[in-house]
Image (cartoon, rainbow, N blue to C red; front, side):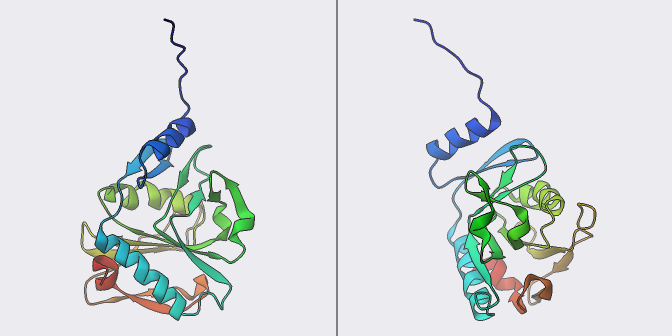
Length: 192
């Protein structure tokens, strides 16, 4: 019996993996396919707390929406996209759909990642990709190294050195995102 073989594109492979691994996050970063298992409880609680914090800060009244797991189309390579843990976006972000449930970077005001087993992606390729996409603020709750990193205001596709915050401190969210608030490092890292 003859079997026809077809070499999959990176995008096709990502689609197959997404269907085969429910609950896993499949992304293409800098031309590399990444798959992350579902988050643990502390990770999920950190994201839920971010929703509450931005709601209390008046994000909706400021014309912003907070979303989890919404795709961000990246300009790095033709098929690149990321799925940030949490994003603060313009209220009309749905008008900026590119493809594959991913939206244009210009509607993102802030993206946040809470590190998991793929912590090196959050601290390496995603920093580069988000800067190149012009994301104004990238917040990383780095559970591997027990600190929070605040990347902001990319210049020529690169973020300056991040601001680092340790336990017992609060991270001031830049007013440029459209709301003013401070986030507890401990809650970002632990979820409660």
